[in-house]
Length: 421
Image (cartoon, rainbow, N blue to C red; front, side, top):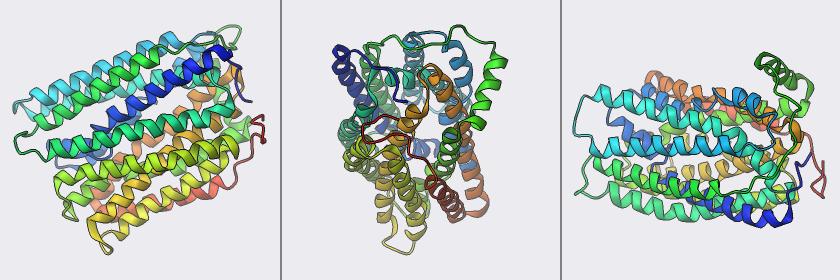
């Protein structure tokens, strides 16, 4: 199942618009990287790593809640872009307010600031969940299956190149003695906001073709029962989600690698920029591989390699105290970038290939909801670190990702050399 066949006249425009969106958005997020910059910023407000895990969870968890509801509302619509456009501009507004709050905060009640951050991160994440269903459906219609691997690969490639510059700016800003806390972080968040706005202008210009749709919307209860039945009826979907959940368990430790370097290995604050840069470079270097592998060999291979690389991340973090020290974290973050790029391409494209065109919103929503439970993992990771230390959390992460690697070996081949299922 390869999705709809978009008119040739629109393919080039949509490829370029989507490429601009992906590149600019990736560069913008690098200024406030959720796995390094944001956790260190939050550590200034709370010493609880469990609480930092809660914040990280909010970046993912809010996006889980609306997806099935949105899919139910969209399944009878041939065009779904208006919902996407509304959601992305809510996200932009939330991040802009967060940047202003950080930049102009003058030492007011810390509890008030924490509540505001929780609310803004939740709105940003929730709106992302609303956008996720029409966004994924859009590319299932706008581009042919045998072009999507290179499309997502190039988005990440050029976004990664721009993000190298973002990482350099992060290092300069956090290492500048004339920029005190929280103005330094506020400046980074406002830079993120600027690039996010530019990326959303590009995304809003994508030309959405008509797609297949259900004859009529079903009551939500009927839709939910049918969606749950998909997991029993479609072996490919069930195994894909189990694999994604297990490999995605790597997020349990993600917010804590930079803090581990800072608190346990003596990594200087300004060198967090090197970690961001390593993550970006890892994504850039791997993108050519992932895109070609996806289009020419298949996304099953991408998922398997992604899992193997993801397994190395906690293992090398465990070894960093005994080998090289904090410098080994540069390799860890490079592998995080590499695995993240592969997961974004492999899991998304595999899902688009197994989903029937008319049922694509439901497939996207059930996948997003089931795998979205991983948003609780950073909370568990923070609790593990608080109670038993960083190495216990990294060891648990390695075991869980190892299960995902084993499951990936059982994934079926869903298309042949021509790209047809």
